Length: 159
Image (tube, rainbow, N blue to C red; front, side, top):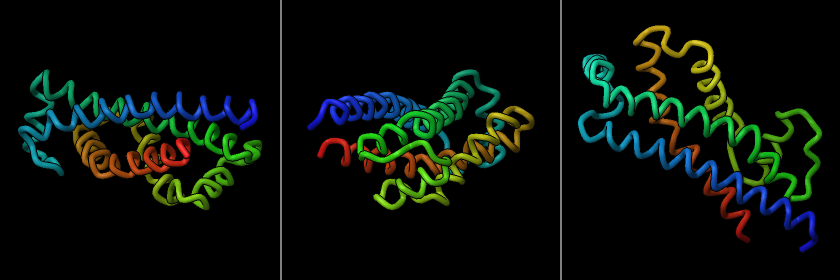
């Protein structure tokens, strides 16, 4: 293994470590919410969540960690994986996603759903309770896909 390959592998592993921390905290916050609420959360339960400082903190943690995880994947991990694979990363992001799809890391359409949700959070978060409720339920639905992406990258990196 050449020096560059080793450096790229170390970057992948470092980015994976950061991503897994976000995922772990995201899952922990959902576990706390799931002790009292079933997902998808209904409007009356969500009103309870936002009116209790502790459950509100868990809800905010879910949304924050999802955003951080999506950022880490899209801004750091994907490029480091492709560099490790010997690929050129100086191309449009869609081309990078297509390369990741071709090596069974992700599904491009699912990634765009994740990215769109992240963008919605960045622009509309806290605008109204219905939006936040929908965001929280959608994150709960998509978190397994994020974990699948991380696990696929992890399997590739430890070969």
